[in-house]
Image (tube, rainbow, N blue to C red; front, side, top):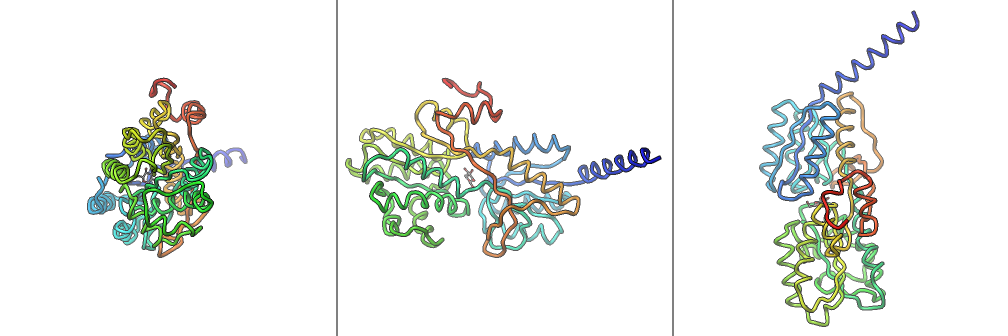
Amino acid sequence: MKRVSLFLSALLCMTIGTMAFAQVQVGVVLPTKDEPRWIQDQTRFQDALKTAGINAQVLFSQGDSAKEKANVESLISAGAKVIIICPQDGSAAAAAADEARAAGVKVISYDRLILGTASVDYYVTFDSFAVGAAWGQFLVSKATGKANHLYLYAGAASDNNAFIFFAGAWSVLQPKIADGTFVIKNSSEAVKLQKKATLTRDEESKIIGQVTTNWQFADAKNKAEANLTSAKKADKGTVYIEAPNDGTARAIADAFAADKDVTKYYITGQDAEIASLQYIIDGKQSMTVFKDVRTLCADAIAAAVVYSQGKTPVQTATYDNGKIKVPAKPSAIITVTKENLKAAIVDSGYLTADKFTGL
Ligand code: BGC
């Protein structure tokens, strides 16, 4: 009798579990198809959603906040109960989040934080400060002596992450600028602030205003070329470049490689994009920061399932979005160079070896 009731209650739990699982309607909104990073996320989401047995739409905003809002509205109309949004523009996305909240939909901010609204339930992200710190540590580890040439580049000012990455890098680089190891070559605003160990958002804005790539490859290339045109021969030779992600790193690296007065360059990146991993193998990019997108998708989906059960997802940190402290779960990052690329990327099962030549 006892065994039968145990069996029945186990069955009941399983059924309720499956029901909750099957019922959760999830929508995903990603910023653009034009960057490999977000195609990675789409693929990983599709895999993870399939494994979890969840039917979900993954929509793209194509760099347009109006399209993003329309995407969120169409997901609400389609009956989504949880919407996972990676905002194109952190502040502009607040209106879409508010609409979702008003419709009783849970909003999960994905990778990038939605700013200036209380309508964000949860934030899954990587430790973006650690990403920037990893760039700084890498560049510092390659520098010897004094007065090494430092070129700074940043992401888009509409993306909160760009500020966190920059702050992380500054936390490591600034002491080395202050002690004369590095000299900043391409930002008068950064030079003005170089004695300050930590920067306010406004101060960071001034620097980012000068060195932004807008996360665009063409902008990155143009800015690097303009910097190289105005730099003197004495500002070149061996250079150290803080590039904010893999796409812009390749564009900036190509510009520096094409300058005959640049004899050697060290350049950072992030996202472990296939093209950049190949650049690292080929000695054209120095490092990338591997952010295992499988973890982020799994965390977002787990949170969606937990919400469908009326519970609250695991919180390990909070991020202030200017309105509230958003419960969050940041994930660890890994620095990848030529030395550990095979172990970190291929042996870990993230990408297969056939994607690369000369590994
Ligand atoms: C992401 C990066 C990405 C960048 C440009 C950031 O918010 O964290 O992984 O490279 O946006 O899309």
